[in-house]
Image 1 (cartoon, rainbow, N blue to C red):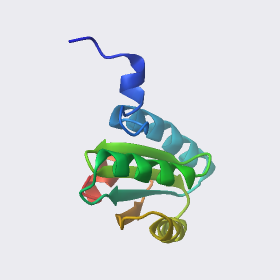
Image 2 (cartoon, rainbow, N blue to C red; image 1 turned 60 degrees about the vertical axis):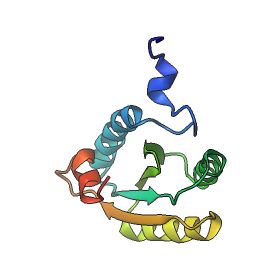
Image 3 (cartoon, one colour; image 1 turned 180 degrees about the vertical axis):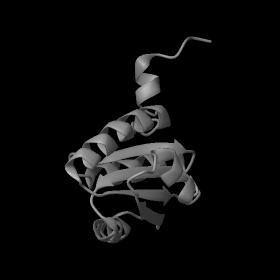
Image 4 (cartoon, rainbow, N blue to C red; image 1 turned 90 degrees about the vertical axis):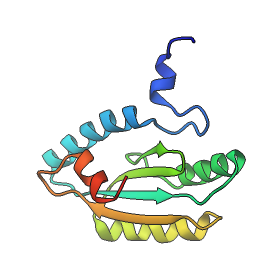
Length: 129
């Protein structure tokens, strides 16, 4: 078995999205910046239905194409993605609406916001990720 390379720690081999490891590290930096600037942060959990690898990759590409520059998208599990975005709960709701109308098959979305003293792990636990 060959040792893991840097790219395998950063990007999911199938989808090209961030891995959980890279997501947690990047999310800490984004949260720190948002706290300093008093900017709200929201997290969206995206659960995909049973699908082929090709459909999974296609869904990941469509999700990725809808993101803004500061948003983070990661594959956290076999059929679970997480999106961290600068913005409040209302902004997350608008993005969910846009994604739900853009991406087929139908995906399951849930979102929440960060409290000032919460970590990314605590927020993801609240979302059941």
